[in-house]
Image 1 (cartoon, each protein chain N blue to C red):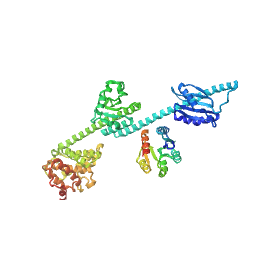
Image 2 (image 1 turned 180 degrees about the vertical axis):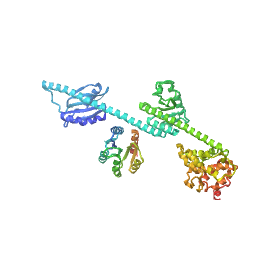
Image 3 (image 1 turned 90 degrees about the vertical axis):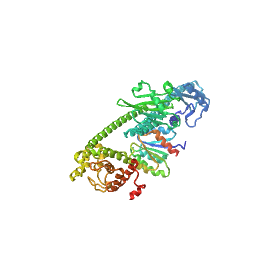
Image 4 (image 1 turned 45 degrees about the vertical axis):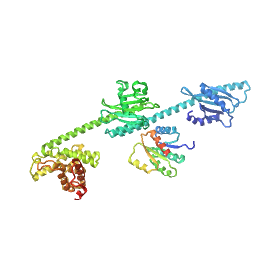
Amino acid sequence: MENRRRILVVDDEGPIRRVIEMKLKNRGYDVLTATNGLDGLEIIHTEKPDVVITDIMMPKMDGKSLCEQTNSLKQQRPFLTIVMTCRISPEERSWIARMKNTVLMEKPFSPSKLLEEVEAYFRR
Amino acid sequence: MQEHLKELEGFLTSLSQISRLSFEIHDEQGLVVSASAPCTRKPDPSEIRDLSAEILRRGNNQRAFSCRQGALFGAPIWIGERVVGSLIAYDADPPGETKSSSEAEEGGRRVAQMESFLDQMARLLEEKCALQREIEEITDELSRSFEDLNLYARIAAQIRALRFSEAMLRNLMQEVLASMDADLAFAVLPQKTVRPVMVVRPGIADRVEDWDSFSEALLRSIPEKAPSLEENYFIVNHSQKTAVFRDLHPDPYRFLLVRVMYNQESYGWLGVVSFRFEEIFRQSELRVLTSMAEQLAAVIANTNLYRDLERFMINMVRSLVCAIEAKDVYTRGHSERVHGYCKRMADRLGLDEAQQESLLWASLLHDIGKIGIPERILNKPGKLTEKEFQRIKDHPKKGFVILKPLEPLSESMPSILHHHERYDGGGYPDGLKGEEIPLAARIIAVADTFDAMTSTRAYRSAKSVQEAVAIMDQVSGSQLDPRLVDVFKEIIMKEKDVPSPCQDPTVERVG
């Protein structure tokens, strides 16, 4: 049980959080949740999740800042970040390309594709 | 039992500390939650197991007596019609042997209280389980809605491309196959010239079967009348239940067909088939497929309209060109031929669709400005006067002015205006030079020059292809773009099957 993979879901929208949480829990992952980037940041530092799934537009701290502030952590301890956004613009692509181990997923997202992405990461 | 009952462990532990009661929750597999007050003796686990089994079997409150622990109480936990577990409580500090009648009475009252308390606790647990289950169901439904929404978004993105094509249809069917986790997805649109599109799940692709005939047979077997056909779909959840469909395939399957229809006009069907029965077709899947069929039908209708309009426009243009050429007996068919040469050059040069389109319109219309030139000048056999030549030289500008109000031709306008520019800058109307001249105008100039030489004109007879090519070589680089002359020569030599004047064309170019 100690080796269970840990995944953090950061999104201010309850239903989205809930759906992702359920899908991941059903596959046996430990799921942590946060409703904004600031809380997410703290959890990343304290709980050290293996995957972070984050929205971009959120109160207190947005997903972009969260990625930027956690990017250097990946040098010591690699983890995957999945950024979910409503509109994939060239600017968004370019800052995400600068982040280590970070992928983009378009909203409205498909829960099954999200799960595939996570499982593919753990298979690697 | 439900894992979330574990969350109650903390609550039951606190309760056991203040009440000096110990609690256990069991399900068919055994102990799920245990909450005991500290420093308690425990009854023999087998005693509790037996009690729980009895509760699960009978579905009512049970009592047992443990010699170590005294009385054990248990109540069933129900979910709907089923007993899913038992809630068991016992005294952490069992009283000693019952001695007096007042103690026995006290014991009896305690039992009654205990049972009523346990019942209430069990109801609470049931409620929690039911709520949890409901949340899970809602979340599950929400998750499916997200999948649908995602599919809608992707389909909308595909359809935004607006032009109907086989590739677009194939993409759509791939999306449907993946999102519905079906085995086959197909689109049959007999009204369109496209072939039926069939996509097959990889797992089933190695089965050597003629899926096209199967889908055709399915469509043929739709009954004349069915209530769902009023709403443009037809669904069969188990093929074995209907003789017609049972006979179409030895394996049982289920399928969903949706009619592609727009403004009362039917274009064909979309279909999804599955040989697996873990799931049924959901209402939301029907909705997605129906909405896709509607959008597809609208795109087809639009594309048809667009094609009609385009055909109408091109015919208008051809009539217009005929009208001008009728004035000039020597140039009949010239624009069509230039158009033909330009098309082959565009293919050879690998121009993109937009570039090709504007070039081809311009090639047809490049001489439209001649409409304003009197026939006596156009058909004059002798040399033109300076004034007459000036009228002729005005035709690119006139064409430009005539066509300018036509927005759809805006991309073609620069090449109509500049098709008489020379590569060395000595042409008209603006004296543009080299790459300043739009590519399409330079292409038209090459084709125009060649056709002018190889057809009879008022002032001279037609030259042979070889003669024309030789002259084009002479003006390559001065009048015409040399790169384009080379491309044109390649095309024309191959087509006319004219033996090249020199075996090695590079030597000729050097010469």
